[in-house]
Length: 331
Length: 216
Picture (tube, chains in turn cyan, blue):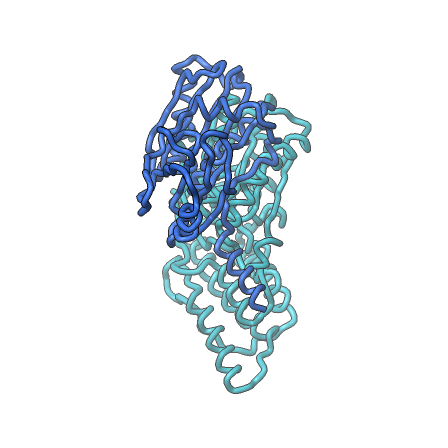
């Protein structure tokens, strides 16, 4: 089964053709990152405008790359939420129109389900498992008892982890997006500054806004006293706390649910600090830990095509009244 | 030749099927914030009632703004995807032109106007006898528009779906789709990939950036 998938929930216009939920036949991603960097973050209205400009070109390029026509496609998949509403709508309207004119099934996919199923493009997922979804917009722990069954165990109560990286990066003046820069700086820094461990409780929830404020306050204090802050050391101190809280809650979820498989998903899965530490802790606890190739970590349509295959097997389809949803539950 | 007309640039859906210069099916419906949920289903219904298949459509005329940013994108994405997929000509038309063409009564000038908030309008001035704009489409303040209109000689009528405080005749917009299509159908079509919205206004983030640059 070949699924043509479209993803436009944030600032990437992407189209993929995915075979049987596990083979990425062709993927095109048009990133707007250079545009939004000028504004220090994604501007929703600008993102929507670019999606509209690019949508048909991206779809055409994807078909060409695979040497396919729409006749080779069995179904259309689309990210319907969560995400930026204006951005989502462009993808949703395009997908619905294709499903209508070619009379193909339309499969709605939750963006987080897509991030989780990105793993299936690298290695066939086995169940039960715990998925840690970490990105610019999400920080969630999801328990999957079986194929395409999601139970959210916990999530961030305020900022997403990627968001906190961006904000900290802005404070210490190293630009946008903050994740990769801070990760790199942390590698050469030492843990010099004391920062609070956020939401250090028994829940599976996260909180990063307090940590971000602590970093901002620290920077201001040093600034007022005229003391120079060591940026690399601050990056390391910040990243250590993020890694510790994420690792602790993730391992707890695995133990509580008696599950020995962890998958990491989302853009922040590319963060080497988080990745390495979880890998180490999983080894210590005899837990199988996997994460997608870097190119499948960030937003892309192939992950949507992968998830859609399993959604379709479960009978999940939509008609042309499908609407985009800026916020919608996974399960 | 069967043409599909589509306008979702306001809170209304205006769509029609035109066969040999006659409207054979049309929908004019206020959908408010539900354009995404209902636009395509309504088009499907219209097709099915008339026994028309997507393959039968030979041309698309789409209204590409100004108006609601989100609304503009809903109709334009549908039209653009349709035209690209079926490799058929697509012709964009401004919402202000569609409004001006639809004016009723004996006026020299039609002033289509869309409330753009903060005392501003998307507007233009249309010479009814000659079917052409005498002032380009603009995003302007009410005061600026009034100053221009005050200097004009001739009978002026506004077409708008918004509540505006003006001293001229005002009529609600009821699109005369047959007339609109007959006036624009022979215009040059646009490559579906390059068809874009006619927002008439930069985003706030861009405006802020521009004014920062100017102040530098």
